[in-house]
Picture (cartoon, rainbow, N blue to C red):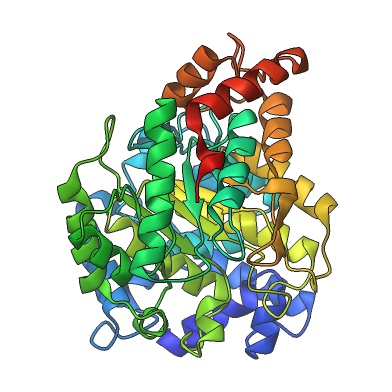
Length: 456
C-alpha cells in the first residue's frame, strides 16, 4: 500500500464520528466501514513500519515513532495481522508482563488499527490488563486505585475561589492525581501566584499532592528560572509536527522543560514530572492532520508523550466540541479508544469525561463513560466542583462522581494520599469516605490548618 491508501483504509475502518465526516474521510455507510475493517484486520503489523503515514523526513513525530521502535521486541509479534494481534491481546497468553514487554514494539498506528476492529468490551478488557504506574508525591495507576485531579478553575484566578474549590475537593478525597489549575491568564506572574497558593496549602496540611498550573510550557520554563515551586510541567500535544507547531511547541522545547523539571527533583516517591493533554480533533482543527483520521492522529500524540516519562496523560475527550465528536455515543467510543491506545503504548492514561453544552450529550452519557473507564482501569479522572467548569465553560465530572466510581467499583485513592486522608479523618480504614457526622469537625480542621480562605 501507499501512504494515501493506508490512510484511506484506516479512516474508512474507523467507527463513525463527526470529525472524520468534516474532513471528508469517513465511510459513506456502515457496509463500507465493515468492509474496510475486514481488510484492515488482514493487514500485517509490519505494514505500519513499511508505510509511514507521514514522511519522517518532514515530520519529527514520524521520525520519533521510528526511533522509538524496538525491532527486537517486535520480532515476537511480526507474524501477526491487525486482527490476529487483537485475538492474541484478548487471549490468556496476553498478561501484564507479556503486553508490557511489547510497549516499544508497538507503534501508534498499530494500536490505532487494532482499536478500529475492537468492540467497546474489547477495548475495556485489553486495557484492564495493562496498568501503567507512575509517581511523584503520590503513586498513580496501581491496580484497584483511582486518582482524581482537582480542577479548581476560576474565571479571574481569584485566590479565595480557587482555595474554596480545592478544599471542597479534599473533602471528597480528591487531588491525588494533581491539583491542576487552568489559569485564566497565561503569564509568569499569574502562574507563580497560583503555584504559591497550592504550595502553601500542601505544606500547611502536610498533604502529599503535586501541583500543576496548566500554562504554556514556555511560561513554565520562565517561572522555573525564577525559582517558583513547580512540580509538574504541562503542555497540550498533538500527533504531527505541524499540529504541535500550532501549539507553539516542538520536541526540543518539551525536552528542555522535561530536563528543567527533573533538575528540581521535587518528587518524593518518584520523578515523573510532566503532564500532557490531548484530544481527538485537535490536529484537524489546526489543519495539520495530513489526511489522517482523527483517532489515528490522536494516537500518534502518545509517541510524543511517552518520550518524556509523564506522570499523567489526559485525553480531554469531548472538549473540542460536536464538530469532532457529535454525541454521547461518539464521545464514549473515543474515550475508550484513547484509553486503550495509551495504555498499550505504556502511558499513564486519564480521561476528562466531558462534553460541551452544544453537543448532543448529557451527564447520563458521562456516567456511562466514567463507569466503563473505571472497569477498564483508568488512572485518573477530573474532579470539577459541581461538574461545571465555570472558567472553561464545559461539563466534566464532579467530586461526587469520583466518589461514586470508587464506591461502586471498590477503588481507592493513591496509597500515600489515602494514608494522609485517613489520618485527617477524610477516609475510614477501608479507604471509604468518612461518615457525614464527622464532616462538621473536619471542616474546622481543614480550614484551621490550611488558612487558604485568607488568601488575597
